[in-house]
Each structure stands twice: as C-alpha cells, then as structure tokens.
Image (tube, rainbow, N blue to C red; front, side, top):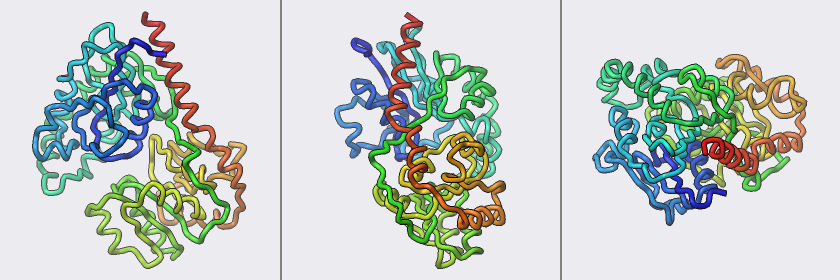
Length: 377
C-alpha cells in the first residue's frame, strides 16, 4: 500500500514495555521497513527490534539521564528537534510526551497517534507536581518545573502545529487534544490480540489487579478496601518503589502480591479470577478489555475510560461490568458486595472484547493514513 514511501516511526522513549509500547509494536508491524527514532533505547534483547534501524538522540550518551528519561524533561524537546527526518515521506509519532515535536520538510506528512496531550504539562500538572517520583531530587525537580513549565507549555502547543493529522486513542483524549491543542483528531482505539488470551468459566475465589505501583493507579485503595473486607485479592506489579514497599508492609494475609509476572502468568491469573478490579481514572487502559477476553467480569471506577468502554445502558450490562461511584473503601466494597450477588454470562463478556480486536485497529490506521496521503498529494 505504501510502496516507494520512506517511513519513520517516532516514540518518546523505548525502555519499559507498557501500553504505549504495545501500540508502537503494532504500528511497527504495519510498516516493517520503517526506521525508528526515540530519545533513548534499552530494548536490545527484544526481537521486535531485530533488523530495525534504531536512531537515538544525544540523551543516549548522557550517563544517569539515559536510564531515567523522565528526568531529562528539559532536554527531551531539543532531542526530538535534533533528528534529521528530511528524507522521509511519512512520519508517524506514537506520543504521550515530546516525540510529536520532530521537524519535517513541508512535503512530509506527519501523523501523531496521541495517547494523551502531555499530562504533566496540561491535564494532570498539579497531581504530577505533588507526586514527583525523583526521590531526593524531588525538591530540585519542583523548583525546575515551576520555573520552566510556562515555556514548556508554549513549546508543546507550538510543536503541535507540526503535526498534520492527529489520531486519538479515546474520546477523552480527543477532547483533550481539542481543548489544549485546538486540533481535531481521528478516533482509533488501540487493540488486543484476542487469540493470545486464555479463557475459562471456572473461576477461583480471588480478585485480581495488575499495573505499576504509582499513586493514581490506586493500589492503596485496593489495599485499604481488602484489609477491611478480608476477601482474597492478587495484586501484580513490576514496580519496586517506596509506595510498593509501604503497601506490602500494611497488607493483611488475604492480599497476595506477585512481583514481575510474565504476560502468560498475568493472563492466567486474570482468566481464573472471579473479577478484575479497575480503580483508577484513566484516559484509556485496555487491561479491563483483556480481562473480558479471558471471560472475567470487571468491577470499575465509574469515570472516563470505564464509561467510554461500556456505558450503563449497554445491552451487555450487567453481564460484563459493575461500577463503583467514588474512589473510597466504602464505595468499592459496596460494588464488590453487589458483584457477589450477580450472575454473569461469560460468553457475552468475551463477545464484547471483539470490538477491540487487532484487525480493526490495523484496518483503521492503514485506511486513515492512505486517505490523508491521497488528499495531500
């Protein structure tokens, strides 16, 4: 479809494997000849990058910052502006930070798959400011943020003019793109590969949650709730930080922590859980959809992505999700008690996840890029 087109894929950094990286991998699959540009790269072992041309910025050579790209905030804008992309016909940035800041020649078409307008500049600035994760350097980071944030916001807004077409990963992200960047966007949801998920209607007596132990993911809410209700829950993370160690110390025996599970182990635990619990406010997060692919119902905080994924008047409710209204122990435990009185149709749970199959994502991305490329010719 894109023969004789030279394509570059840009991403903020390639270090850990989370949802933004999974979207990146799928875009890479769609464009196997594309070159990859990023601020820092630490995935040499990953077969996804075999035979790929990987171009890193000057940050890769700066000790300390090259392993902690989030601390290089004042350098990342210049890192992406320093890339020479003059030979490319199409540039695709997968961005929740500064990778959309790259500069191209006038003829190049720049598509940005936007996971969110930069959260620590805009929608969640004050939350990030109060909960910086730089340890003993938090004091210095706060002073720097106060001093530079105004110029960084201007820089971010101006840089969005370099993007020809925005793609939003959710309705909420599209709304933020319109609010903060004053730009329209095309909504294309990310994907899951349904064939890779085991499923079972034989459920064990535990609840399940997995993600990074950072404040807004609300592991603390789950620990407080399950310390009170004494029901069994398995919490999985790969983040060893102050919050993780604090929560382990205060967890009662019914709360079981699993550190650094493989994808296969996570999906097995998910498929055998009586329910997956989804407590944070999220722009988009596909793990609850993954749970549904394993025939597991979801207990979710009633805001943003939860409501966008399954609305209360959807024909499959209450056979898929149970909501709780507030991020409090009482509200969550009330939803759990309600959940335990209901019966669930596991086939309908799995059926709903088909709306997020990888084939839909691939088709929509390719069609959108082809359509806009033809318009610009």
